[in-house]
Length: 390
View 1 (tube, one colour):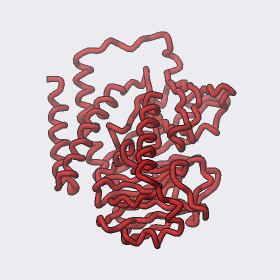
View 2: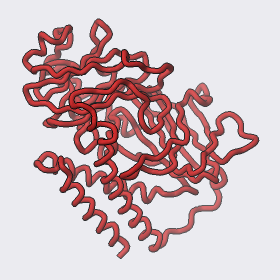
View 3: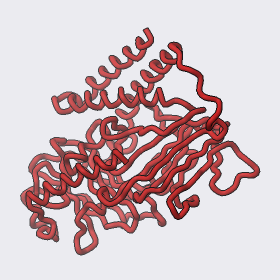
View 4: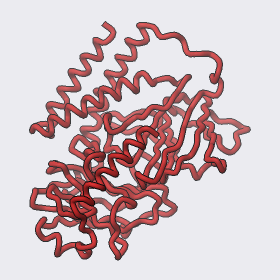
């Protein structure tokens, strides 16, 4: 049977999920099975997208196939490459806060992360007045001109991130890829059963590796930190050229709140989010589990004070933990023009929930009515739906 190895991989993947330490209650197991379903979908998608000679962009993670503490403010696209061929990437720049490109030499495994061979954003190449652009990626060329990026040895994947600071006002762009010598000629060979069986086998290996990797990945970067703290801003592991991040993990009771205070940055993009113990974002469409600087209410002293809690404090910057007593915290800054220092980073304090009015210096300015809160959630739902159709 062509699907035999994949079926075995799905069974192994379910065992991995059920044996995970955070799958031992109903919520954790349910989320783990949802994570498994999204991972099955993504693994099949990526296996069938393995076309290095006839590449195309796929959305490598999203709200229904989450991975690696995915950014609620980002659209992710990926395409497979080979380092001995030339590719043309063209499109039209949208109005989003950031558009960045990264070439990787492989994929994540349970013991290592792929190397970033190059990373840059759209400030590194020319964009026409109408927003159109064209880039070329390929082997070293003596006659390479502007807009030509040399692929390093082992280049295997091009990852593109389009990041929204203002969900309602910004619009996505367009992006395409093709191998330079294959457009309009030399169609791909017809499919055959042997090739399909091989893809099912690859999908199974992707699935199991994906789950094993991102069960241990947080320990590399998060769980060795003291709980209810966040790091100083640092260049994000993985080589994204224009991104800094601050990371941490929390553990809170229902009578506690975590107040995360951070300066409103001069970076074009600044975002804060929560993640579950499965190392994926929480429901950011129907709940306010993330906020960008544009979405947050900035206090008169230039600080943003996020309030992470289970109970509703009636505040604009409430970040809902949706029943997650434990989880991850992350702040990202992108499209930077300077290095960040500790002064740009967050201060974190655990506060008794009932003491918030006296502990937040601009508490009354942060208050929202139930109607205003409902409007905020409705705006998220509509803006996200529009983004996903862009």
